Length: 169
Image 1: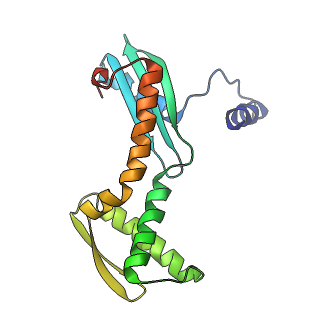
Image 2: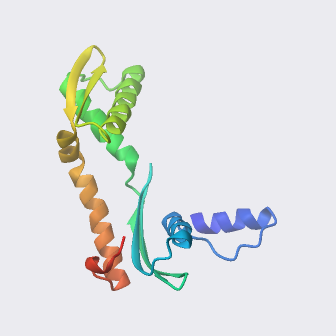
């Protein structure tokens, strides 16, 4: 329905729609135009609200989409909310009705997640509480979500008829 809506909107704007590409497929095409590489690639796209995986074969500058998949109910926002709940628990904040505190928790979680991309640990201050979160703690916290993305990757590989060790990138 969403893809059809996009096509309809494009037609209303006077555009002739030849084909719609999933975002990771489009990214792979853009990447492949410069890489000169041939073989099977996987594009893992964990966006804010969704996760998408595309398995493609590149041969002589031509992409063949072997399989696509993902999880439309899983994205980076889920990581943020999971970390915000973890911080809430550590800080002993029981009340979820205070919107200001909710926003502060979420903003703190997002900042911590970003900081943990480079740092081994981060100090967080929220609602009068200060604590430290390590990258190891964060990784343990998000492991079930990451596992969901990997399951979708395995399904896409199976649908493509490709083994993981065949993927170049």
